Image 1 (cartoon, rainbow, N blue to C red):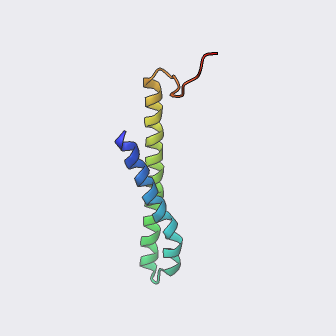
Image 2: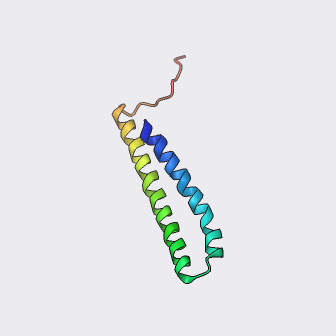
Image 3: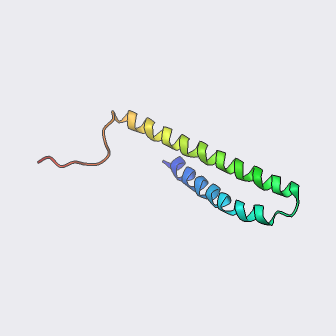
Length: 77
């Protein structure tokens, strides 16, 4: 499903932004810039939570559509 790939790309990009937030906070030279960096960090964190929760819900829906059966094959012995 293409949306799962886009979700993965979005989570990765937001994670990179969150990884850069501490450095950006450290070099922020004005209180206004400090607040902007904090806002970007909080927004990124919230968006990651929303994307991951939506991806998990979509996975649960796919599981329910297949009648709860697993996608892995099991050999009969």
